Length: 393
Image 1 (cartoon, rainbow, N blue to C red):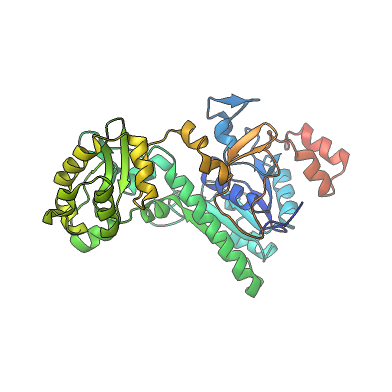
Image 2 (image 1 turned 180 degrees about the vertical axis):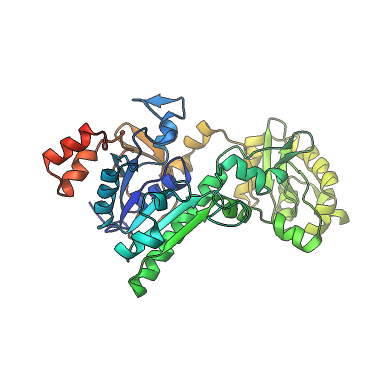
């Protein structure tokens, strides 16, 4: 099979549902961890978050549950929790996003039970706000955190008002933070031989996305304004009209600005004292935008954006999903991957010796419940009894 992936030998139980936790589990699974996704008897909610559907499960679910083995288990029952404890005996990482206090209510809380019974176990909890504090234990969804953490207050225009970012960015970043925490805990365990509790909350993760808006406010005391696609600190850094379409130009330094003016043959802009440096350009951004669009109005959007980026000026036409999937660089980076008739987004993490691997399509509901129990030594009689009680599916 070639080189092993980085996390071969690490076993993960993914009890989480919806997005942040499952995404974290998929990142670990892509890099070699054995991940068992344990769903409740009604299944992960995202199986029904469609259309589109395939074989009764939504594309939403498939996007974040690759490379996992699937099991359905009713943890509300004593028998279900006993099965979980048997699985945890050989588990390195437990990922969960139950309502805070649920595991404790079931008698399997980390501090009181799991950390003592399994001292090397790392438990990662994805939560809305953490356990304590004024909002501790309350439920949190991505969109609510976008509103509460300040993200919506900086996204949009004066005409539109605050707008939710059009993807679950807080959930995704929380999942990434969970992975970082898990990997830190695994690294520390090499020294201490001890597991620990890892928490990644949506609220905290949402706030970390407020760069540079929170630092700007802490220094200036001025609230950020809605600026659409424009950057609050840099210019030109915005969408610009061309003869055919909008493009995005992101100039980060004076050298790039001079190159932009050179490509556009815009001497009047490059020599204008109002645009001599970024601070001046930011102050006079509206006048700069009007002048740039005068020159860009003679150019095809796609052609000039390709010319500019190859000349060292960060620039792009605004691609849709179909166009980015079909982009030659997407193919080169192997960012769309296939397993049988499954297709999904590939791993962005490239390791030279231990790359990601794509082994298992997202599991059908409960498809490996029986085989997982058989591997744990359950007899056919015991498994049949569990099925009859609907403790497993």
